[in-house]
Image (cartoon, rainbow, N blue to C red; front, side, top):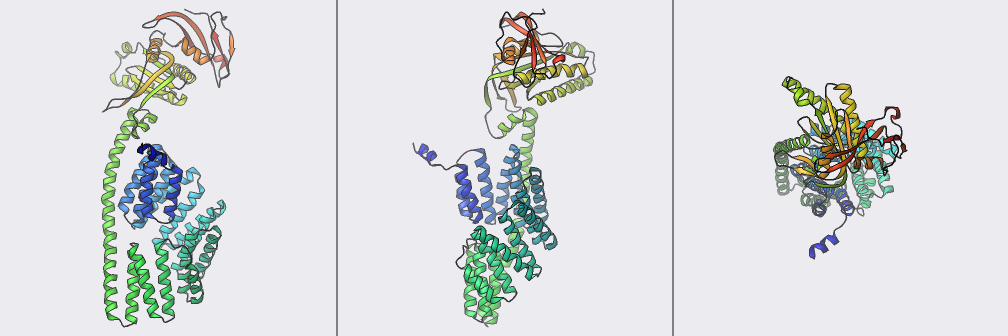
Length: 579
C-alpha cells in the first residue's frame, strides 16, 4: 500500500525537468542532487539519462570535475545507444565545459566543435548560437580575445536572427567582459548597458544582478564612482542567488569605500566578501579578497592583519595551484578508467550488432529481456537448389565467396523492404516481416528471384512464404541469437521445401492476407481483381492441393512477377491450377 501511494505521489518527468532547469539556472547543486534522485525513481530510459546529466551538472558546480565527467560520459553512452543526436550534442557540450573549467582548452574546443557540427546538421540554430558563444568564452579564457569577439559576434547575430533576445543579452554581456579585459572600457560599458537593458526587459532577475555587478566593476575601473554608487544601491534589492555576484557586490562596496577614504568600511565589506566566497567554496575569490585585505592592512599599518591575510593568500594560492594539478591528474586517471570501460562496452556492443538485428541489439543493450509475440507475421524461407552437389566441385574459397555475395545481396533486399533477416543455415536463408508484412515479404521474394537471375544465374533457389502468429526472442548467453518459432515458421519451411526451382510457393493464408480478399472457389481463371494498395505488380496462380508433412492437404499458390502490370495498382489471381 505504501509503495502504491508513493507511486501515486510521484511527479511527472516534465515537472521534475522544469525544477532541474531552474536549479541549473540558480547554480543550486544541492537541489540538483535531490532532483536527480527523484528523476531516477521514475525508472524510464529518458529519466535515467536526465538524472545522469543532473548529477553531472551538480558535480561540475561544486568543482568535482572527474565525477561530473563520469556522469556525462554515462549519459552520452545512453544517447549514443539511442542514436539521439540532439542529446549527444548537448552532453558533448557539457563535457566541453568540464574541460574548460580544468584548463584543458584544446579538448574543450574539440568537444565544442563536435557539438556545433551536430547542431548544424540538425538545423538547431538556437543551439548553434549558444555553442558558438561558449567557444567565444573558451577563447576569452586563453587570452585570444580577437577570436572570442569573432565567436561572440557570430553567436549574437544568429540569436538576433532567431529573435532570441535572452541569447542576445547573454552574448552582449560576454562581449563586455572581453572589452574590459583588453582595456576598451568605453566598449565594455556600452555592451554592459545594452545587455542590462535587455535582461531587464526580459525579467531575467539573476542576469540583471550579474550584469549590474560587471557594469559596476567597469565603472570603478574608470573612476566613475557616482554612477557606480547608484548602481550599487540598486543592486542591493536585486536577486543575487549566485555567490560570485553577491561577493563581488561586497568587494565593489569596499572599493567605493576605499575611494571615499573610509578604510574601516572597506575592511568590513572585504571581510563580508571573503566570508561569502569561503562559505561557497570559491577559493579563487577568497584568495583575491585576502590579497586585497593584505594590501589594505599595509595601508593601515596593521602588521598583524597583514601577516594573517598574507599567510591565507599564500596558502589558498598554493592550494588552488595544487588542486588544479591534482584535478588534472585525477582527470587523466578518470579518462583512462572510463576509456577502458568504454572499450569493453564497445566490444560488447559490436558483438551484439554483429549477431543481432540492430533494433533487437538496442533493446538488449538497454537491459531488456527480449520476448515477443506477434499475432501475424510473414515468414520467408529460401534455399539454393542443388548447391551441395554443385559446391562439391568448387574450391572452398570460391564457395565461401559465392555464398557471401549472395547473402549480402539478399540482406540488402531485406533492408530495402523492411524485412528482418533471422538467420542463414548452410545455403538456406530465413527472414520475417512482422506486423502484417505480407506485401514486404512478397516484394522481397520477387526481388530475390530477380537478383539471382541477373547476378547469379548458375544458382537456382526455391522460396516459401506463409503468415500467421509467431513467437520471437533472444536466446543464448555467449553468442546471442534472435530467433522465431511457431507453426507459422514450420509451414513457411514446408512451402519452400515443396516448391520448385526458380519459383515462389505461398500458402493460401498468405494469399488471403496479401490480397485482403476472400477467394471464392468458383472464381474464373484469369479474373482481374482491383485492390487498394500502394503497389502490386504480380500474379497469384493456384497450384492446387498438395500434401504437406504435418499439415495434410493444403491449397497453395505460385507468386510471380507480372511484367506487363509492373508498378500498377492491380494484380491477377489465376484460380486454375497449373499442376
